[in-house]
Length: 326
Length: 263
Ligand SMILES: Nc1ncnc2c1ncn2[C@@H]1O[C@H](COP(=O)(O)OP(=O)(O)OP(=O)(O)O)[C@@H](O)[C@H]1O
Ligand SMILES: [Mg+2]
Image 1 (cartoon, each protein chain N blue to C red):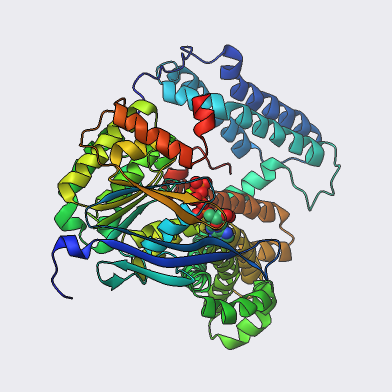
Image 2 (cartoon, chains in turn cyan, blue):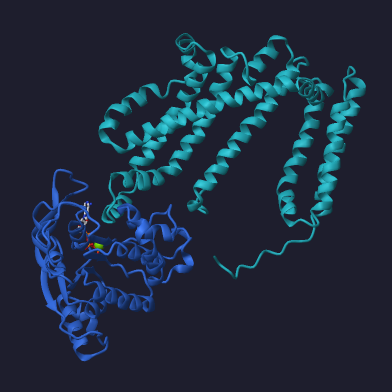
């Protein structure tokens, strides 16, 4: 909009120490690992070493490329301190577990062992992630749809609110996982009942926040729309719902957190697939390397889903740009 | 509906209107905001409403818009009783109240969308954006606009429905003196072209004299009509002419500001 904004001057390259931070941290961490591995019982470190070689090669390539790509430079300036810290943390983890035996060993393997498990069991892990994704999405989407519909009805109509609110207040706070025993009996398939439980967990916060957003729509927006000739459908769909969207997103985020929890519990109790099941299965065999491998996959998986929801939020709420603080 | 000429159908009559509100600290009691207001606006007449802050000008406009109902009294447009809001009575609020989730264009289109006539009348959107000088901001969201720009969008949003009666609650209050005078002329031009009936609330006495056929002066607690003054000057009016200044003195006197103005 503003044509005369000058771009802030950008130095042509990252400072040398920032370029070297990631490969440097990799060398330190892997060097530590080699020192520790001499004393410890022999562990297979080839895959761990390959990981660092890859990091070093990629970071050197990027360090060269950033001279020509300002966008890449900006991204690296933002991300490199975090990557460096993450790599150094791997080293700290190695020292604490394998090096100093500060944590009981079978339960807390070092990073190299976890990486080995990640690679050796990748097919089953991939399959479990896929099953978790399908279950999560089907439950989440079902819960969001039902939650939006009931939230809009409760928020808009005072008679629906009269009957709906008590129900919401009594049923809503019960953790969805408390229903597991009943859900397992009611539904013929564990997958179906788990999807239903996830939907239930999502439904409550989405309904609650949608309803409060709708009923708190500024009266003046509704007044303006009425003087412009708006009927009820316009008032609901083009005034109240857009006005409630910031609130609705808070509900969607809360629901997502609840759905992760319910997913993992439901999988480890009833469903015989997915990451939650994988964790409890690996625990049964005392394969703690696999437990950690699955937790790492979960972290990546859940944070990716969360990031996607943030992206959606930023896209839908462009009109709030500059005023959103979270 | 009976076919009547525009002139008959768009006059406004306000008969003995009372309106009270509950007092916030003592919910059982009610305070009179309007205590028996009667006046009428002929079709295609431009009437200004002036009076001290809190005398009930906005309240009266909401009643004519149909957003609130009076405790007693009658409100008529033409021969029809006002029972609720309608696109035939446009209201520009004291605050712009733009929909923050819509762009400038989206806000201006809102009335067409609400009435389901966007497809036929889309070409008018550009016309109204030009009118308020905001074509360059068509895709901007309201929180990027200055107060004056937002108020211009609100004006265009109300005008696009071609209401028979246009109610304006200090629509130009947030504008700088220069834009304000330009918008006064634009509103006058619209009024002359469309023969819209207009009720304009303003704190600016010069604006009231420059624009209106008649000025209604209100007093406070409860809101009543103190006096009506016909401004029988030919348009365009000279803001510094003798008769203009005479009206000014007369109105100031009624608003009890005469002493201050002379000092
Ligand atoms: N919704 C409401 N609830 C309670 N009291 C109200 C309400 N609306 C208006 N009032 C009261 O009615 C009186 C008139 O208010 P109104 O907003 O009409 O004044 P106004 O003449 O428009 O003032 P201003 O020039 O400052 O805009 C005030 O005393 C106000 O407190
Ligand atoms: Mg007011």
